[in-house]
Image 1 (cartoon, rainbow, N blue to C red):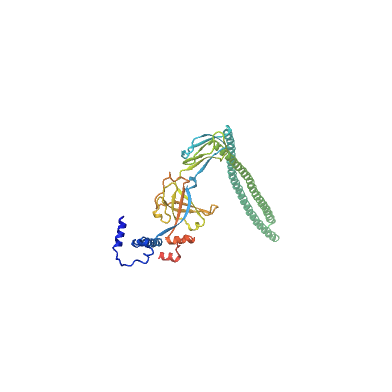
Image 2 (cartoon, helix red, strand yellow):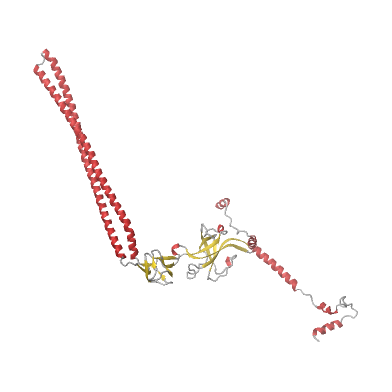
Length: 458
């Protein structure tokens, strides 16, 4: 027998002979051994542990903070448009003769990329002849302009001199008129005196006080005074007519010079118009000549050749057709995130963002950014004014200077995918769960009121 069976038999024989058997022992003697099995306490202990864990979980949910956030996805781009991917275009019509680069070649600004040749080998000579002819025409027009300007200056000087001379002659005529007027006044005074003298002699002659000779002399003086007055009047009339003639001559001189100057100005305007038309015709020819002379396409800035878009020798190109794709070296890298239109009103420039770059190992805890590993900080610098037509709005996120620097450029090439979370308010975890279950929007920070501003100022 086993030790267990012997122990059970010993216990049975040592029992009191007159002890009453259990009620069920007579009916179920086979289950008597169950009374010897000790009761099991593990389920109760497990229940107590589950209850304790439940209360600990509720305490954790009630007290743990949670960082509300808005998700977005995008890629790495350059901040300035000139540093983003761009096409290198053909400046002239023609075909590719020789490539100086291959895909993946790093080039500096001014390095030759491709040589393009025109179909007409004499096109540059023809353009040069056309340019020379137009420049000669332009030079002749400018010479005429200078000649007309000098002619106008000479006519202006001659007009001033002629007008000054005419004015001097008019002034002399005015002085002669004044002298004639004074002579006339003197003649009139002499005539009046001679008339009085004649009348007095005629009155005294009948009384024998004066002789007839004296009367005749008085008459002679009167007649001479009348003749002098007539000569003075004639001189005054001649001087007045001379003055009028000189004034008319001055007007004629002024009109003649004005006509000559207007003609010279019209010729000057025609010369300037010809200069303008020559310049307008010369400019496109010079542009075409310059483009033909620049048959070697160079890199506009430092970067890497991404694609070559034309085949040498067999493909015809037009001016403006792309021949290669250049990815410039970016000095300022940002992340372009796209967020849903429902989240856009909650985002403002200056908000903090956590960025996870594709290909960079990271362990992200959205609600606890402080314990995340491999994520980087950013700041929202721009929120687009309109969507992309699909209800998504673009954000530009720049590196946060107060956070750890972003990975090196060899990891953050343009086009690298990135996920971002715009950080909002910090709330309890139970609040965030309750908000998610009910579909409520995230909480916004309270804007300071006017009373708060006044209290801060005090």
